[in-house]
Length: 255
Image 1: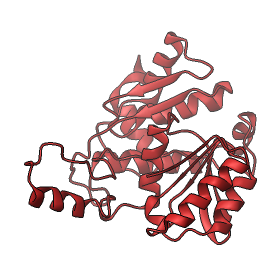
Image 2: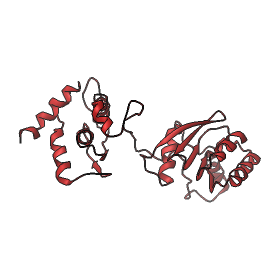
Image 3: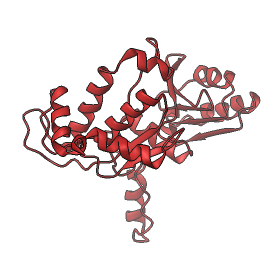
Image 4: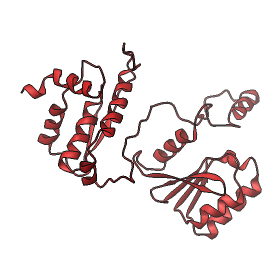
């Protein structure tokens, strides 16, 4: 079929002011979505995303059909020779930004979005854990153990942001990366409210009793704070435990 030839993919990208000659045609991927019967909360996974034709196709499909099929696109940061993009992955991210920006507002309203709601996508990079692992294979002597303990005085890797730590904690807490996350402010501190308040995560470095009381008053199911936020103040940490317990919060942990 003529609409499935690769040249169509490159021509479409030019409409978004992106030069890339190896993009698959959107119509081909939409045809595959159709024959596989994707609907509802189905997820389309593309492990070789390239310029993110699959993401573009799923987005268009949802606009046309009023469906809410999700997509996950995975791509190595493969270097390319391009004036504007360093890697193939950069092309895919920018493509989706421009596709969403040009989306027809009437069709977006069919999916339940309006002028007051944002629409977009999330980008994650696979890296080692934000938390330094404990090395159980160290020699059994006092010097090696002392060094290992010193490394874990601050067990967060350098250069990691609160957002980096947040999403690792979400995964470890059993939440998907697509879970709604709202940023709140309690007593001057930033709090991440996950799944409409089911989980509160506070990654601030200077916690107070007022912050603990403000979070407890909202009665989340779980609360996670950065251990460094207590700055070695065992009394504050003990008070936090009692504050959450008195408000019926089932789980309070520090990392």
